[in-house]
Length: 278
Image (cartoon, rainbow, N blue to C red; front, side):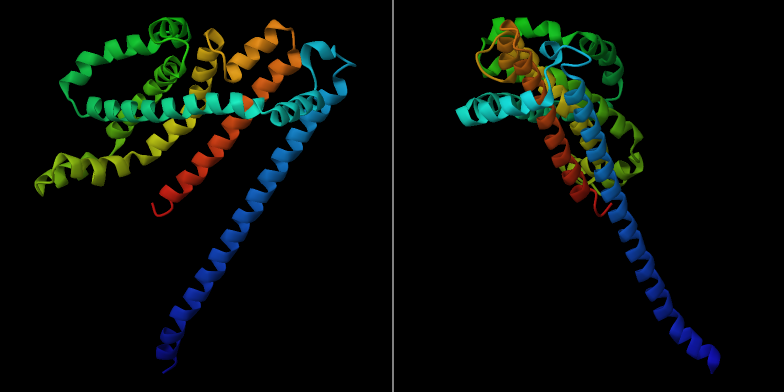
């Protein structure tokens, strides 16, 4: 009798223990996130505090400016409307180029990984193209496509496409190919194999390349603007540099870093949503 009673009680006890363990784990994650956020804030305060305090004392303020002057300049740009004028142009180039480059690179990586012998034929040429210094191509793109947005977008594509290609390629090579064979056994079409098996299997690789390419996209956009443009953060940095306005140069650099951090946080949230049930 007691054995049967304990058998009836045990499942509820087990469920209760699992609930406690889950709550404890969620509490641990919340504490971990809070401590990470606090740690990042402290590091930022220390860096900015040292920069502000040493500027004009240990080193000349003219060469490295200081955080308070940069914040003041950002405020002035925001009030005048120049902030959005330059930021929107650079952001538009970076996001359009990033989207196109990710699609082209990911599809090319998938096709290359599944192509068999063609992979071996093309690999040295792809490596040769990858080894090209894309920075040196920026003047050519300006000559070919003008100083408008098109040349900047193409520059961004050139910066991000190979990272997307190699990540998708490695994702395919490391996935379980028995899943593809099983889908073929059930006579699934190529699009179903792609959408049901391949893309879900390499989602982590795609998101990883997307995070890496945020910085590459911004670098590509700014480099293209440095070469030839009349708008954007790259143009603002060049213009400030020509006037020996070091605060203006650092303002442009800080804005680029802020954009990169915001975009990365957006990708992190997207990653959590997509990988929530994996």
